[in-house]
Image 1 (cartoon, one colour):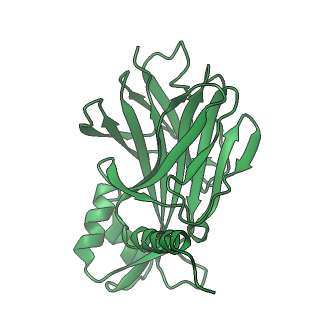
Image 2: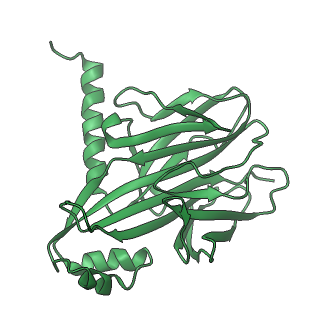
Length: 273
């Protein structure tokens, strides 16, 4: 039976987005809310984004591309149920109030490196200058070789009074916000903890993308302490993407790749005062 035009268009868009997701390897992935502060019982609308310097393309809802896509309010977790090709990927009623966390984890994708300098440049950028020594110590081939990567994104959206706090939600790697940027007593210092498999990542690089009201983006680098915690000063009226990447060797399993790359992302906005 022939597909009608809307369904065909939705399918083509979904396929294209899946292809784009597969080739965008060194780019950040994040959840971008249409509004980070929402009226009680309003709408939660957010897009899945892939790009660089906090600017990029929008990916549609495509269930084959993720293992988890949830809206979390307090201890209540609600999976996002969409249709293939939905764009924005999230468009659901908001709760009466509270701090909402939207989480999304992708299925694995692969990239082949045929030139070592390209991988070295990526590793340097993400805080792993010793990657050549680690690669050799594991006995991995010089080139070509494959990397397997997944994305683990979280967004904070304040609904109504935005009361509440973030906590670990069981992502492979994640940011846990230890401060609530929408709270009335927020002092402008965003404190986050970076986790991998539930454990703190010590001395991990946190790349911070700061977008001002004119859409200009400033990038700074920070590092976590002995408890996996980083403190970052933030500015009222600005929107933020925090990014932290883990590069882990793949050993003891059958895989066509030799490195796992786990990308953690956190997005939120600081209310204008």
